[in-house]
Image (cartoon, rainbow, N blue to C red; front, side, top):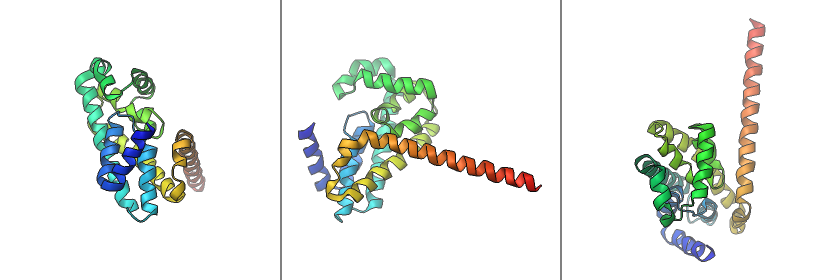
Length: 205
């Protein structure tokens, strides 16, 4: 993986936005390329003035959405038996699909949103969504909504860390969990404020 990582970094350095989009498409199509590597390095290139944040974010999102749709279609058309039979040719581990399947079985379409911010699951969640033949429009909305904050966060972190961007490779999983907790905390706070504001309006009336 270390040797492959160097190849990926050279590819991004040479091909810029196209490489970011292609590698993110591959990652979301269940080929295990760490998004922290792709987006973290892209963030560093933003720091170095070789990319713009908006351009890198757009490339990451376009690639991520394309790869997710591809994996969804594979799951939808081929089913679990197809993935179990041929997935190993594309480095898809049955155990990883099992984890994503358990999440989908427990949370349904909502898992497509939340899992985009979790290690391993975010790469494979499109498959069980395809297995279940969930509505494509709902799948796209949940995928976009879950992918955008994660993509922007890792890019921004890589940009802020600058030459130390590889720290993201060491703390990527922990960063995912911290991000989830932060989002939950913000959600709870906003809900509390809404309830408090609604209660105040009712009291005045």
